[in-house]
Image 1 (cartoon, rainbow, N blue to C red):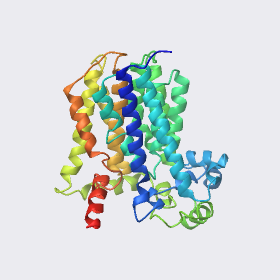
Image 2: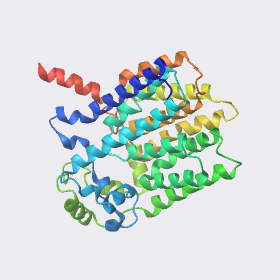
Image 3: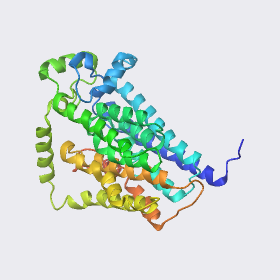
Length: 374
C-alpha cells in the first residue's frame, strides 16, 4: 500500500473541510425562523409519470416513487435533506477520487475549486432544485465515462431530469473528446443529437396537461407537510409553462435589473470569465479554443429561458472547474497567479440561486443575524 504524501494529505483536508462547510450551509435551517421548509420546493421528489404522464422534470420523482424511497419518511423535508446530503457526498467523492487518483497537487487551485462559490458551498445553499442530480451526471460524463453508449445514455437521462441540461452538453462532449474517447465526428454529433432530441421533445410535449387543482390535489396527498409551504410548492408553474412563456418571464426579470444591481450581476460574470481563462490556459492544445469558450459559457444562455441567473452561472463556472481538473497532468504542477484570484473569490461563496435581488445570501444572513442580536 502506497504511503500518502504530505501534499496528498493537504488535498484530503481541503476536501473534508469543503464538504463540512457545504453541510453547514445546507443545515442553515436550524438557525432560521422558517426552519426545515427553508429547503424550498420538494415536489420534484414526488411527481411521477404514473400520475401525470410523461412530463419534463418528472424522471427523478418517478424513480423515487417506483422504489417507494419517498415514502420512507413521513416528513417530506427530512427526506429532501437526507437526499441532498447524500448527493453532496457523492459529488464530492467523485471529484476528489479523480483528483487523488491522478495525483493533482496544485493546492491553491484545488482549494479554489472545492470552496468555489459555484461548487460545494453553492450546492449546500442551492436546495429545492434538481441541480445536484444534474451535476452527478455531468461529473460522471466529464471524468469517468468510457464508452459512447454510456455517454449518450447519461445525456438522455440528464435531459429527462431537467431539459435545460442540454446547455451543458457541449462541454461534456469536449471533455469526452479531450480524454481521447471520441473517434471521428460521429462520436461528437451523436450525443449532441440525442440531447437536443430529448430536450426538444420535452419542451414541446412535456407540459403537464392536467388542471392546476387536480395536480395540487394529487400532490397534497403525496406530500401533505409541504403543501402550501412555498409559492411554487406543487411545481405546476414549472411543469405547465411553455417555452415562450418561460422566455417572456425571463426577459421581464432581466429588464428589471437596475444600475444599482449591475455590480452584483457583473461580479459573478467576472469570476466566470477568470475560470474560463484558466481552463483555456490549461488546455493541451489551443486548436479548439473558441469552441471550448462557447461550451463553457453555454449554460449562461439557459438563464434566458429559466431566469435563475446565479444557478446557471454557477453551472457554467463548475464546468470550467471540472474541465480544468482533467487538463492537469498527473503529478505535474501547473501553478498560476490566476489560481490565487480564483481562491480569493471563495470568500463570496455562495453567489445565490434564483433572485438577483438576493446575492451573497449567506453574507446577508450573517449580517441580519448580527443586527437582530443587538
